[in-house]
Image (cartoon, rainbow over all chains, first blue to last red; front, side):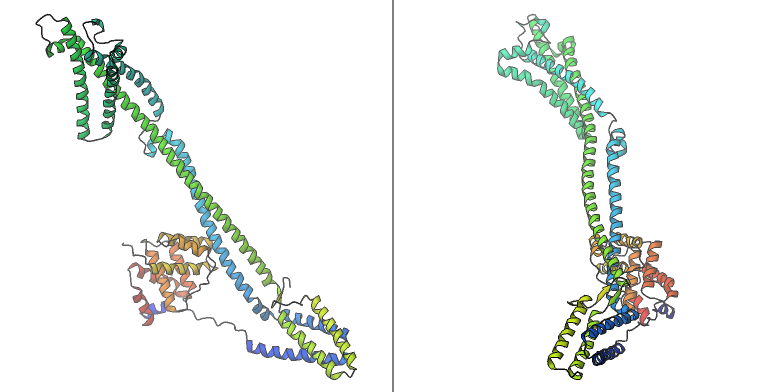
Length: 421
Length: 134
């Protein structure tokens, strides 16, 4: 336990060097009296003569300044506030420097991030897998090839279903030629001449198939047995629809050719080449259309994925740029502040290096000397009053001039600082 | 090892320590940054640190009483252990504070080790301070 306690032992505090104020005060008082006496004595000797007074004042100033320069500890005392102020400024400067180095690092990191994002934008096209995008390297080309195939197939489906639905639902085989039983080149115009509703019916039927194809694509995207079931149902439905169309056409042709008493049966339909022709020309092409459609939708999504990736990166870069700007302006203002602190520090340094002239103290002694001088004029000189008055006035002028020369007339500060020794 | 929770009190202790470091000529900018990151990692908010970093210095000095000094240092040791490891930088920082807090030169390393060992096994602060008074 004793060992642990010893661990916490503090160093013995170093006794501070105290400036002996008491002693100083005594000394000061002594000096003050000395100045008074010296003024008094000199005045008697010179009979209060103003020019001598001027010389005396100059001597006083010089000896006081000399004395101050020699008193190093006194100088140290006077400089203490400046040293403390400088210390404070140095701390502030260090803080700013730390902040600058932290922000500079942040700027570096942010710029690096921006560069990274920019290269991501370029590389994502070449190497989408790297960025977790499951896409072909050239989705665009494949998309356009798919689109090129899809367009004619779509037109084909339109033509086929318009004509097939017209043939099965509206065509009158008694008047029309049999050769055009399945495919009727004039199906739409005929439907139009039959009536608006008929034209709309045959014109919109292909969209039902496209809609089915679109649904196939959508269900394809969803995983799970329910989606698969729906998919299979859709295909069966479409197939059945085609079968019905083919059956209706086949029935019409059969009825047209039928002898009396002959009945059209599904068996007849299955045996007919026309029946299968209609199914294949319709359903199989429809399946192909669905597959191509599915394919180009996927490619389009791939293009979209890459575009979205790039868009996100662009937004990110924009945000990073904004924060970069902010950091830069921040660092500028901190640098500005840091320069100010540096200025203050060096300004204080010149003060610390320089010599501090205690103006107040000097004036105190100066007036003591002056008081001594005037007292001597008043009590020791036996001149007429008028002459004494004249001497005093002249002395006053000399004293004023002296202080003006030293630039000490309007004293609102305690110390005067000479920046060089 | 389970991370000890860093209380608000601990964080404010750290801020005071950081302030002391800032007003010390011995700490250079790099060390200051290290401290900064060290605090940030342990959840002292960036705003608080920024405020400290850019505010005019409110003079903070080494605490007077021996007890408070030990308390501060122990708090720092606890913070150092917060991530379950002691890096060399962290060790040196603690050493530096021990030195700055005027502990005997010969005791700096053993004191640093003592504080870290106790912080590791979660000795309570009261327990540590008891050593002073016995």
